[in-house]
Image 1 (cartoon, helix red, strand yellow):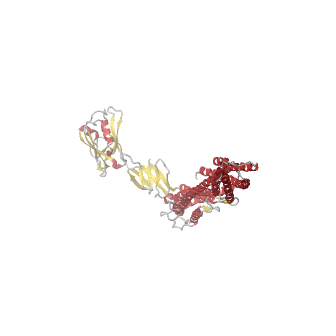
Image 2 (cartoon, chains in turn yellow, blue):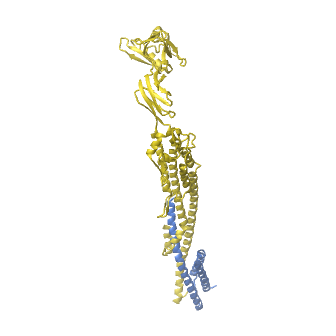
Image 3 (cartoon, chains in turn red, brown):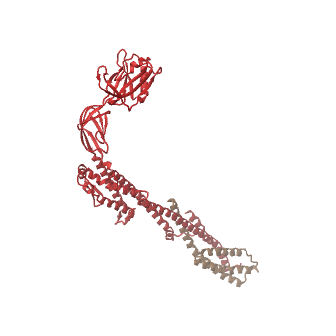
Length: 487
Length: 108
């Protein structure tokens, strides 16, 4: 290198290659440290992959540990033109007969026709409330009641709007009604094609018999003649759609509902009625979801086993280790997982059949290589015939029993911030930092040695150069004596 | 003191000096060798500066011959010892330098 070339040229000496062994000795500690450093870094990343595999397994176990997974019910209606339904976790499996005789509907009323939507009609206060009609008779042709009684719904307060010069046209009244959402009705103007074609139509926003409108007007007679409508008294509007409740039977039991969305008539089930007629509603456990969760657990478990095998392998022929060969942390976690999975669950109270205590009973068995194998037919059979048994095998409300719950809790600890993996990686981190400090100081030592050698070389090189001069002078003197010259 | 005597005294001092230098070189005591080498050089510089008005006596000449033989023999042997040492140092430094460059390249 540059340094050596310049120093060597001063002395004019031939450069031998004697000391490669000494050089190696100087650098041996540093090389050893570099090797250790890379081995620790490899271990650190191996722990990272273990952490990921365990987290995946924990997630799969946690899913199986939730009792709700096993209460996943699918609701299916045999006649979808009558109803559709969804089931919550508290629904029970089984089947119910539904017969819908009447759908719920919202009341709709129309005013008499008005020639212009923009001509002033009259001013006053319009008050609207809701209630039910009893007795009397409805004339379908006129849409008016005779001899009926209106009973206001005390839970719904009357709401008023003011009609004045700013909004006293048909369109203005429509807009005033729509602007006040507290009224609970929607207004539209329908053109019926007659000579006075514009009719204001009010429709209740809610279905059900108790959502029948009553409209009182105080003010101009024109406004009152247009809108005032009391089913038990003066009716200036025409009812076009009657307020009705939904009528249905569930397994023969009569049920009335103000809305077509019927909840809890069957426990945990929400039915959406869409037509009259009969249908069977079937509530079935969704075993496909459970089967997927179990399969996912098995494959996560196997992924961890295979990773462990790969990270701890020892190649006997080549005598080479893997990053975590002989690592006690990993071996400990692995054996604890295996022990937990091989410890039978206690046989719980199970009305439906035999209690499952081991995974083998539902078709999941341990192979010689430590991985799990599942027998889909046996698993499906277990799910179909003894769902609660399978549930008890994996989950519990308190999270303490069941392979899913137990494994989830255990793995959360193992991968957590005070778990053994964290401790092991923290330890490696500390070792790496110490090693870096050592390497820096070793490096400094080597630098100091080089500086010392360089100084020595320079001094000796100078000595040789100086001796070349003196020697040549003294040789001259010596030759002079022999030539018997004088000095 | 005559220049002749001064000259002879110089040779008388150089001869044991090169002897000691050889001793230090054999012992590998390079620091001491380098210091003695500086003294050796300053004696030789002094020699060069001495003008002789008349030649040396024959006895002085004989003595000078003997001293110079010893000095030159020592000188040759010292350089035989130093040369391989220099070569060793040179090689060592070269290798260490290369290794350091590698280490720096790896960011350590």
